[in-house]
Length: 417
Image 1 (cartoon, rainbow, N blue to C red):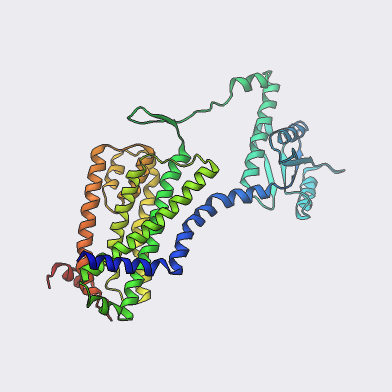
Image 2: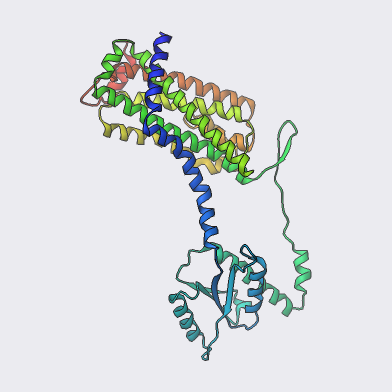
C-alpha cells in the first residue's frame, strides 16, 4: 500500500514541479514581498532626486525665514543639496486674494508644488492653510506641519517672556526602547515592526502556498476526470491510496516551495542586516505551518473531489480561501492582547490555529497547555478532515455531470458502500 502511495506522490510531484504554474508561484511570493517592501521606498527616494519648490504667504512677517532655515537644516539630499526650497511670495499687490491667485498660477505653470498661507492671527487661531494640486503628498505635509507648529510655538513662548531653547531642553522627547523578556530570562530589544512582520510573513506564506497548491490540486482532479486518466489510476490503486499519494506529493511540493522561500528570506536578512524579523520559536512555527497546510490540503480534497468543471474549481478555491482571510480581521486585537479570552478561544479553532499561533508566538509565548491543546486539536482535526475527504474522494473522483447536493455528500461520508 505504502509503495503505491509513494508512486502516486512521486508522479504528482514530478508532474507539478515542471509546470509553469508552479514556477510562477515559486517566484511570486518573494516578488510580492519585494514589491510591497522595496518599491515604495525606491519610489519615495526617486521623488527626492531634486529640490522641491514651495511658496509661503506669511502675513505675520516673522515665520517665513525661520521655517525656511529649519527645512534647510533638517532635510538634505545626497551631496548636501536642500530637499526643499521655500520662497516667500511677494508682489506689488500684497492683498491675500491677489497672492493666492499668484500662487495658483505658479502651481498650474509647474513652478511650485504648493503654497502655505500663514494668517496674521496664527498664534491665536493655530490655523495654517496648504494649497496644492496634489494634496496627497502626506510626507511633505507632515514635515512642513511639524516645522510650522514648532516655529509658531516658539514665537508664542518669546512673546510670553519664556526662553524657547530652555523649554526645548526641558521638553526633549524620550526614546523608549522595547525590551522583550522571556521566561528564560533572556532579554532583547524588540518593537512593533519585528513583531508585526514576523507574524505577517508567516501568514502570507501559508495563505499563498495553500491557495496556489490547493488550486493545483483541484484542477488536477478535474483534469484527470475529464481526460479519464483517473480511471486508469484507480485500476492500479485504491481511492485512498490515490488520495494519500496526491496529498503527500502536494505536501512535498509545498515543502520545496517553503524551503526556497526561507532560503531567499535568510539571504535577504543576512544581506541587508534587517532587524524586522524574529526567528524565535521557529521550529514551533514550522510545525504549525505544516499542520495548517495539511488541514487545508484535506479540505481542498474534500471540496474538489466532486467537481467536474474548471469554473466549479475556481468557485471552490474562492470559498475555501475565506477560511484563510477571516483570521486577518482579528489580527490586531490578538496582537494587542494575546492572552485575552478572545485570543485563546480563536487559537483553538483548527482553521484559525496556525494564523493566531504565529501572531501570539511572535509577541508572547502562550502557556504550555494552550500549545499542547492547540496541537492536539489541530492534529485530530487533520485526521478527521482526512477521513471525511477520503470518504468523499472514493465516490466523487469518479463522478461526472451534475454536482452532488450537501445531503448527498453527507450520505457519502456516512455510508460504508
